[in-house]
Amino acid sequence: TTYSSQIGAEFMHIPDFDQRSWLYQRLENAGGRFARSAAEKTRILERLTAAEGLERYLHTKYVGQKRFSLEGGDALIPLLDNVIQRAGKDGVKDIVIGMAHRGRLNVLVNTLGKNPRTLFDEFEGKFEHHDDDRAHTGDVKYHMGFSADLATPGGAVHLALAFNPSHLEIVNPVVAGSVRSRQHRRRDTERKAVLPVLLHGDAAFAGQGVNMELFQMSQARGFAVGGTVHVVINNQVGFTTSERQDSRSTLYCTDVAKMVGAPVLHVNADDPEAVVFCAELAYDFRQQFGKDVVIDLVCYRRHGHNEADEPAATQPLMYQVIRKHKTPRELYTAQLVSEGVITADDAKAIVDRYRDKLDAGEVTVELADAKPSDYELTIDWDPYLAGRLSDTLDTTVSVDTLKALATKITTVPDTVSLHARVAKIYDDRRKMAAGEIAGDWGFAENLAYATLLDA
Image (cartoon, rainbow, N blue to C red; front, side, top):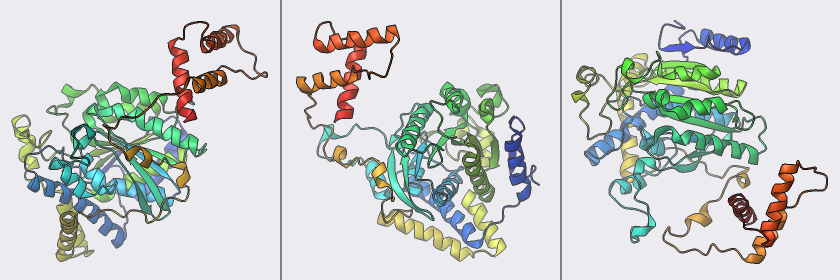
């Protein structure tokens, strides 16, 4: 049952014996059975209920509006919940998430704790500075980022979801850079206190070259972040392409991860307990070995590419099956009722409580009561958020300040012996600073950086 039930594990391509042995032991000790307490099972159901509940609420209230629903991949929400809670208990201080549009609204509300009332306002065209047309960009709600401090058994964990355009995977190196800088600021040389989590679509993961580039950088000294937890929301359709031979040349969309010896865990998204087990395994592997790991969340897309599309026009047979298929929450509810963990009335009460929170515009996750103990290591954006985008700001820098900074950035310590070519660059830049020769782009760029660091 270890390798023939709900999880398909690929790790024989990993060259390191210790890593393979570690995975063998964890998988075979479980033996395809994922023991959970009643409280843990109830929490999983609550997270599944939240995932389904938000989508149904939006589907009913904002008919036909695009939201790029998570439905079918609902298990992503308990997966992320497990990673966050486990990481917090383990002492992780920051988690930086990058993702495209699929399921983003659900993650914003049910993982990061964005107030649902704010999301509803965005659906209704209301913005923070509604009286000033120039104060917001008009960007769509499924590009928006967010940050919050979540409560975990180990204290507050700061979560940040990076803003993202519709260019799918382009956010991934942005997240990696953010994580690397946070680790540097924390002096986190072991790279265990800041965790990157990247969510991908199946077609984009296999098809976008930026993923291969990031994998190639993942263990390089100047760019390593101690491993990334990747989750592929594999709904088996890339826009309207569902046949493997039309979308890629590999058996699995995750095969690109094998180039760096990353283990891949294929898991049935209709089995949330197996999904949560994979979340635990992936997080622990990353922390143990400092390497990337991939969860292939094999699911489906209940609606079209967006809610205005008719998927049966391009995948008629697939959607005959999907429309008859019970939701992950319904399947798991039936399982827990049959096990005697809850009653049908208990399950209905969970649904009703979540809906009541949405009606009241209440946050649906547990936020931290206090800031993290090392809050001084985080960035306070309040001074930058107080104004409006349309405000005119004075960004000039005095000539005296520029001259002083130019002197600093062109001064070389006496203990350093420069190569002749490097010495000429510094000599030329000192002349540029004195106005003896025209400044070039490199000098101007370094001077601009100096003004930012001096601010």
